[in-house]
Length: 430
Image 1 (cartoon, helix red, strand yellow):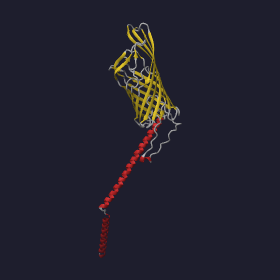
Image 2 (cartoon, helix red, strand yellow):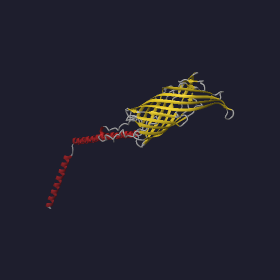
Image 3 (cartoon, one colour):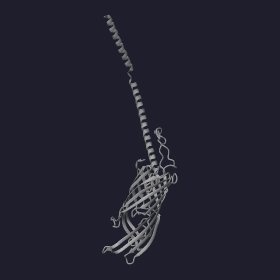
Image 4 (cartoon, helix red, strand yellow):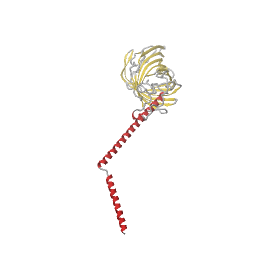
């Protein structure tokens, strides 16, 4: 019994000692407020440092993604320029800068060798294929020759019985030759935006044969006339709307302004009373301009599909009306008033194909629908809508790293379209 009491007392004492020891140890492990504040500050510093590192990684990732997108755009433009163009060499792939430079590759592949790269497919329309790269300049001299012939028969009178006309018959034949020499300059503001200016010089020569019959004796006359001088200066801006590539279309919007710097049809002298020519008479000097300001919007689509590229454009040209127009005639000034030419809807489409390392071929169709002209708010009976359709063939030969020879031939498919159009362009890149 006594031993049990001693054991119990000994056990109680040990337990008490253990409790006191644990309490003393716990008392020693409790941090002071100063120590807790120090540890909290250290944790905050670590969190801030990790946040800064995370933000730096995000920036590096964004820069790397931007660099990759620029490389894709450059490679896509290079692939398109290898098949169709006329605007010069594409911009090289960009190299990543900043924190992403270490992670991004310094170069994507090897640039194509000039001796083996596919040539630019001959442009057959006014819209170039690939926009001029940023900071680059393209100078394009060109010469265009067109020939057209038309026969006009005007009947003025009345019929008493079928097939018998009482009155006048005016027959006119016109053979028209036009040569337009132009100097066009294009400059790339960015890889997506370019501006263009075109200065044309026009020479025109018409051979006219007129004949009036059923007016006593038949009368006939021949009259040759010509005109030359500066034509209508044009300024154009083009912008690439999206990032295209192989098997993905490019969309390019454009806005063109056409001035009236050339001599207009109302300014040249019109002679009346010339033998064989009735009606409104005949111009003794041919105009070199349209006589109206114009603004044209267009949307071009380019779809590369190796080894060819497909292209097409939809456009609308608005011609601004003029007030107080006075016509210069041999009988003195003739007041016409307000003239509002009709708008012109247009579309074209085609395909370009590279033949070998230096030559290529294009084929396409161009159509324009010219609206009716209004004079003083009303539409004259002789004013009709005109349809102009042209089949175009183009050929391109690369003369060197920065020079290309482009030749296109157009054949008129409608009555009012020029019978033949031949254009030679030689774009040079700087």
